[in-house]
Amino acid sequence: MLELMKERKVLKDNSTFFKLLKISLERDLTEKEQNIFLESSYRNIGYLEEEFNVYKSSAIGNLIIYSTLINNGITLINGLRNGLNITKDNFIKENIHQFSAHYQSVKEYEESFLAYRENSTDESYDEAIEKYEEAIDYSEAYTIEKTLTKC
Picture 1 (cartoon, rainbow, N blue to C red):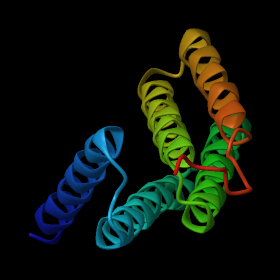
Picture 2: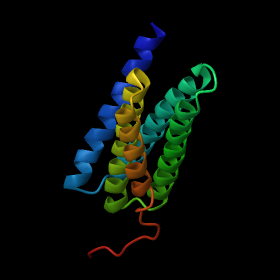
Picture 3: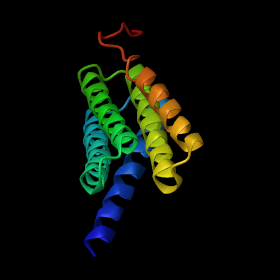
């Protein structure tokens, strides 16, 4: 029952995130919408972090490659959290789009990690490392200073 409730929360936060992202493409978000976007995003990051921590605690033995991939996931989540903090302080359209691309790249890494976890092939490992490197690149493109806007 708890798993079902958690799954619904995750789906609701994902839905809220993408709904507000779509709205942000059409117009600037209101302050209330910004707060909802940020809260939903922080929860989505928390869900990802919880998953990787569960993987970490359930790792059996000294599987160096597996542990490295888990630690890569945790590193990406920390970068995602930092990107959201930059977005919070500089809530501009560019950062919203950057955060959404960054979030998507971390989700793609998670999927490639799960693929590796399931079959542990060299190809799935290479794919996970490729997705990791792509996600790292997204963590560096946020706008830290406010930009000028049209009057």
